[in-house]
Length: 149
Image (cartoon, rainbow, N blue to C red; front, side, top):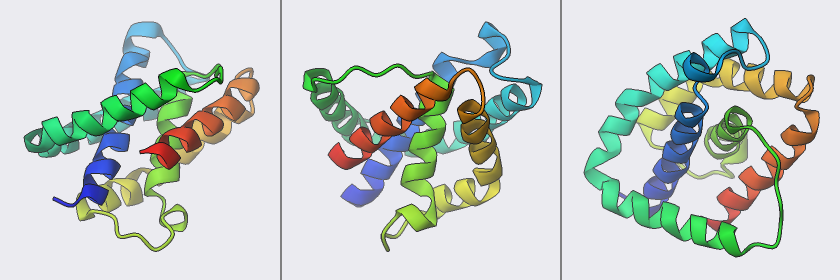
């Protein structure tokens, strides 16, 4: 597996963990019923892909730990919600127009193609609600992660 795919997988797994951390089943609705349903569906769609990357767990964890270290020493404060950050990470890392010509692993490309509307809905709705300020911070933090991985 290439280093580029390991980095893509690391961002994907971070997004998955953010969605799981703030699971609507445990905490109630996020924005509205449709957004909460989409979050649950994204988690369900992501679970087998997480399993696919289990064999590369050590390499992926190394990337995530390095990213966490960089984030912890950054002199910035962010206020965001886990679903917003997860969707921003997924969009900014997986969307073809954001890849700058870089190839995306077929399993991740297929996931994005099938789920891009759900990801966009959650991101857009969070910008239109009481989470507007968090949406700005979420994009800034997502860019930080993507640029520093």
